[in-house]
Image (tube, rainbow, N blue to C red; front, side):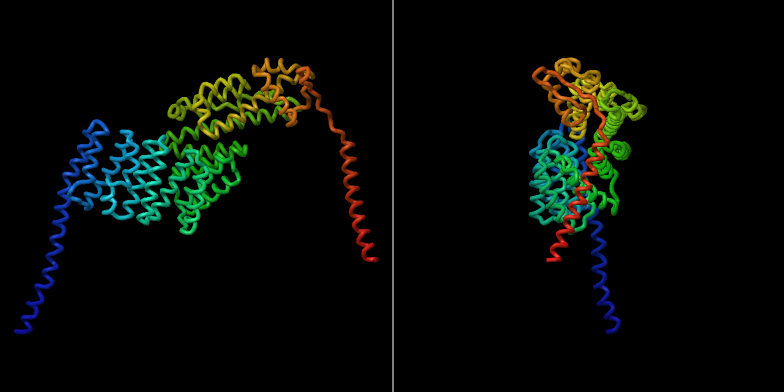
Length: 481
């Protein structure tokens, strides 16, 4: 009896735990069913006509009194956070956007989800805000600083590093190069210890852009090389790879290697075209057109300059022809004032018309002056056109009045006089400025005296021999003594 009663005493013990798990799914199902009111609130947001009407509804979803944070409720509240950020941006309530993630609105939500989910939501909201309000750089910087302070208080190192990388990029866009570079240097010291290659690629790319803006080409190239080295070890998203190729093209363009720069710009443009990112693809197309213009003009001027004193006389319009780049589907898809401005610049460069070139600059100031690379190289192009036109005008003369040259080129007399003196000092042609008479005297290029050059080399070699013999004689005297 005792042996038969023992199993009866033991049987109820496992039976109780067996029933407990059976109740858990019921509770979860009940919790999921209770989220229907949250789903209904989110659906009602679409019915609101204005962003101001959406904000109270979305805030009520996040601050609902039941404090539900199951899988379904968490997903709904995550959607509410994204929608609330968009609503604030649409309503131009930038102060509310700044305190959205670190204020009381999202605090209960972040306290009840995992750190990985929190990092995902914060980064997604930050990217969405930067995309919706790209001109509000002060607001973006303040959001980043608030998140960084919150991450330091919560000891969330990885999220802080990513937001600091974003802040460095925003500071670069604000032209605060010193602050951006200081932040990048401190961040790189941390990332190299952790060997976070994905973030190293992004931070080195920002560092390269900052050094380029400061005209430190050697440091910019070194930073870009470091970014490429880390990128080769991991998978890089097409959007980031296009930015690396774009920066490579910029540096090659600065070095005057326009063919290689064009190939890099083409790679970046094709990737962005596949991503259907028109905003970033249009600058790449403009850079491609710029490379064609600069390469064509440099080749044409190089051909003319090979004949002494004849720079800019020969015109090769085919070199600056960019009609093939903006024809077909590409021309239809990216047609606009940006492409029109670069086409007008190409036409003026082909005609070697400085007056037409300046008219294009005055007609399209935003398209041609806002971009740092285009502004810099168009300034160089203007100088080349000015020199080309001046040499073409003075080429038939041995003595000409400077005022007459200024009248032909239709530019102020002081500008022409200053440019002529600079060209003489640079060795573009041989001559002097007689400022007393207001004349330019041009000398013919005299052939160098080969006999004199060889004689000077003989004297130089004899000097080396005599110096060597004198040194040996001094050594012999010291040994004899």
